[in-house]
Image 1 (cartoon, rainbow, N blue to C red):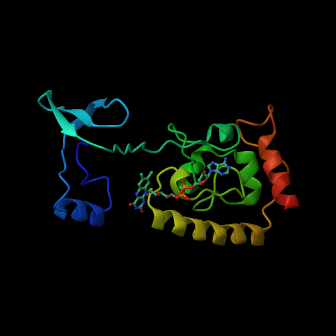
Image 2: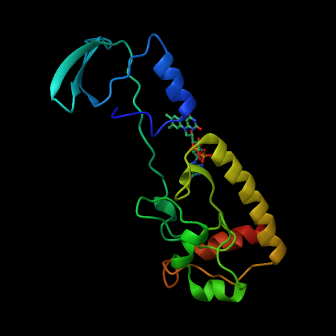
Length: 180
Ligand SMILES: Cc1cc2nc3c(=O)[nH]c(=O)nc-3n(C[C@H](O)[C@H](O)[C@H](O)COP(=O)(O)OP(=O)(O)OC[C@H]3O[C@@H](n4cnc5c(N)ncnc54)[C@H](O)[C@@H]3O)c2cc1C
């Protein structure tokens, strides 16, 4: 890891730094794993000096990072360059004016480029990627769904800039919502 200080919850960093059995190796990358029937050791490299070092190890946990599985959404709602769902003010520039103008408003806080479709948690572009914020956004999204329904915002088959003239996935979502 390069540094855990800036990417992890503070309370976890504090616990790790204080733990007598934990040694944090910064600027260190795993280069090789060794062991015939089970893991026995790792070769790690200090990426600031290039110096390799062998460490005894019986387990290796890999932090796989965050990659949103939103490929199936890309023709329906606007995503950012990494595939996270745009919402609220971030979604506004990507909205289809013909769809939104009759509503007399732009996307609500967690609303996507498709009216009435909301995103919360890790999948949302710009979200904090923490459990509590995901839960909070989920609760907020429910409140916004009620607001959307109370307004009666149900444009006819709006689609999106991407879907109009192609598959009408946006309309399908709208129809599914109406029949729900
Ligand atoms: C290794 C690791 C450690 C972490 N540690 C912490 C921590 O210490 N503290 C902290 O606050 N946060 C931590 N996080 C982040 C935290 O887990 C996330 O921020 C949180 O789980 C996000 O919640 P979510 O509901 O947005 O997404 P998820 O928890 O990812 O839930 C999304 C769900 O949707 C499902 N899904 C995906 N696509 C579809 C589909 N097409 N149809 C139906 N279901 C689908 C997925 O299977 C998944 O169950 C950690 C994350 C990781 C990976």
